[in-house]
Image 1 (cartoon, helix red, strand yellow):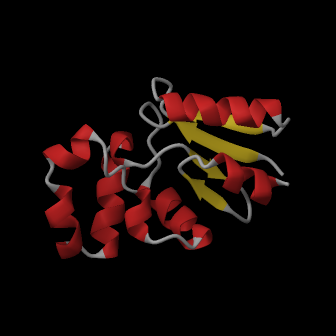
Image 2: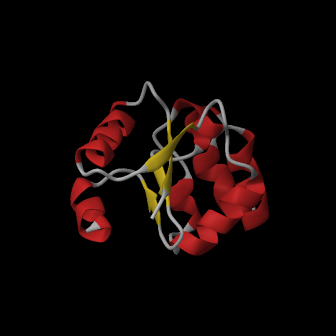
Amino acid sequence: MPYTFLCYPRCSTCRKAQDFLDEHGISYTYRDIKEQNPSAEELAQWIARGGHPLKKYFNTSGQKYRALGLKDRLPTLDPEEQIELLASDGMLIKRPLLIGDDRVFVGFKPDEWRKLLG
């Protein structure tokens, strides 16, 4: 199954995830999340497919998240507004993202990826 791998090249966790994919022979299309930010439509599809809570897609430890005061603002926004916010800047998105036809991985947890990718 081909995957799309969205990451930020300067992120050490993203580099570890990419090494994991390469070491396990998992094919993917690389996409720099800052240069090719996902659209709101893509994000909505991935969020629906992934089954994760919407908040999980936010990079809550990122500078942009803190600068925008999203810890307090997010609960006041409806899901569509949150998705539009994510689509406005790739640095707001938790990374890496690994998107497959039937699954979506948010963040890198080697044991989880190993189990689910077989």
